[in-house]
Image (cartoon, rainbow, N blue to C red; front, top):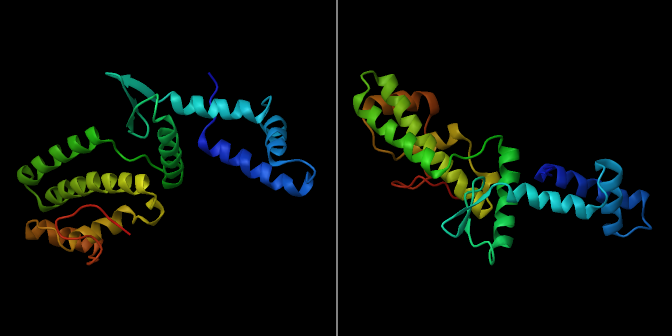
Length: 201
């Protein structure tokens, strides 16, 4: 089945808006239809919209009567909360497109943390201990990014190196890996509260 992703839909809408100058006699709905036919080979804008919805729905599966989106992670009721899912999915897809990566889901984060915590005790070298702490910070970073997407401030979220430098200012760990990581990332105090791992604007 053919699908129509977020970026393509935004491109269609931008082109239709640009047509206001060349096709001033048309309504916005008519310009959307024009661009859908001319530039995307659709019968109408309605076809593009249906394929956009199908693109989102392909990620949804039923788990014990509750819908779960494999892409954006939302658990929702198909009958009453489809609109909420559509909105969140669009936000998530836009963010992933601009960030260049998709945040790890809960299960992957927990698996990574569990393996990394084990390494913080078992690793023999300072470098390997430091790498284990970086893996933990990475899992927390992805959780923080996911929260930022859900609450609409992901554009302001620091990148991973900046996030690590913020975490190092108040995070308790053995002196040697702390010194190793501080040398690599530096320290930026006052951005993430002690005991927290979420970044807030």
